[in-house]
Length: 267
Ligand code: BTN
Image 1 (cartoon, rainbow, N blue to C red):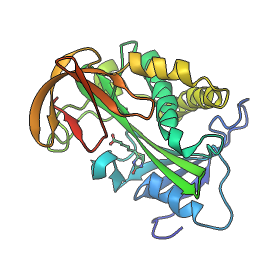
Image 2 (image 1 turned 180 degrees about the horizontal axis):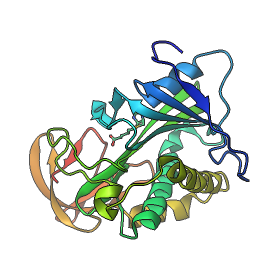
Image 3 (image 1 turned 45 degrees about the vertical axis):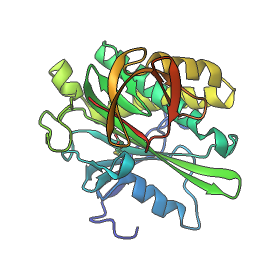
């Protein structure tokens, strides 16, 4: 288990699900640096964990976000989970398809829970209005040209109500919106059902409709806003994403596409 301490690990009983994985194999860790790191270490061992294994942390003390950011979460308050998938049926050049499938599962789950529109701030932050409620960190393990596994890290603010504005001043949670606490395990079960549904859809080549759903739910789609490009503030209209996941912005009729490191939203 490497440097994961203290080690309180138990597997939840759960054999009532019908799908391929459906959160049947949830491992809850009382305290871990990062659930993504935990899965990565496990994958380097000789006996692999099965596809669909979910690592859920009660206290994740060194959570990571995209672009090297920190993901903070009060112990026991939020969903901090990582899911192991083995999308070897996809060509690694189609990695964005998995981002799309997971993102739209989260949107559907959150919209059902919150009964309010949820948007995807490209590439995969979950937004309610102008506030972030969660995010996804997908880490891929390739072997040659084969996509061996994907670690899907998901952080959703659920029962936490105070956030450090120095990390992100635009943060919200399920409790801040619905004014009540939620059982994290029950939420995770519902989320897993939707993730599995979209993952199975991806296997059955539902990519085009998933991509359309993703695009329709993009935060600020069709709106004119400032962006930071190479540190320079520029005004443009978010017009969509390419099939490989590059953000498309329209500057006075001229559409330019960007990688995640090349552009930032001004929120
Ligand atoms: C982001 O919004 O930048 C992505 C946040 C992802 C956070 C989750 S919490 C569970 C998993 N473990 C991590 O260290 N990060 C992800």
